[in-house]
Image (cartoon, rainbow, N blue to C red; front, side, top):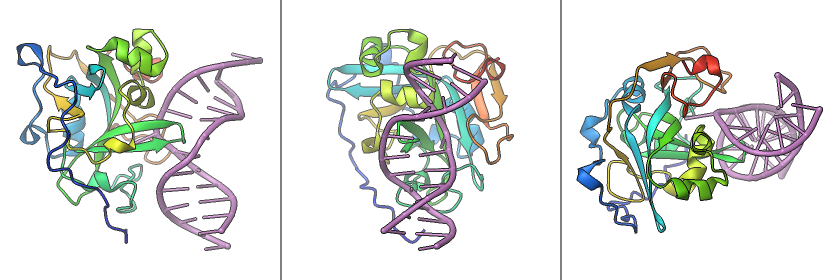
Amino acid sequence: MSKRCSHVRVPEAPRGPAGFVAAAGFPRILERNDLPSDTLQLARFLIGKTVVRELDEGVATGRIVETEAYGIGDEAGHAYRGMTPRNCALFLERGHAYVYLAYGTSFMLNVSSETEGIGAGVLIRAIEPMEGVAIMQRNRGVVRLQDLMRGPGRLCAALRIDRRLDGLDLCRAGPLWLGTGGRRAGPIGRSKRIGITRAADAPFRFFVRDNPFVSGPRALRG
DNA sequence: TTGGCGATTGGCT
DNA sequence: GCCAATCGCCAAT
């Protein structure tokens, strides 16, 4: 709480070297005004939207199929005990990346929510691969499509997301950004969140029903 | 300064 | 299904 947020706010995030230009103008970068201010609404809204990662070797994209909300006053949220050097990206205006290392092994990607100064965010838990499958396979060391980005740690590995992207504005052209949705996502389910102990029963998880790229036990995928 | 504890994953029984 | 790996954070000493 006492330490200040040390993020370097990059006014002009570096453009991805690939200079990604989507065919037929899809996907387009989501504008911040498109994002709901409320954390739960944002978690629901992000289902079906795209994530675009621009790397030296090319572009990797996918469709978000699973999210979890960690809203205001949420005991399970990293911002619950106030701002720290690790979690300060959660306090940025909505649409910024909060990336942290879990269990010393896996990075987690969150999208900050609410207004600046309020700590809250949405965890991206699973993504359905679209473009750049070969890149993801190389980054993950596995081939099976369903295993590339099913799980929050896996998707970060597939897209090579780490702490260097913490604090990045996802509503700007650059190495990582949020894009518009394509074809409409199927029916959206809602359940309790996965892998937490506090506030374990709150129904703050959203997912595309019966989608093979969603993580978690079978009971939480339909 | 230290020890317990994760918003997980992959390998093995 | 069970469990070790692995390490940064943070509350408590």
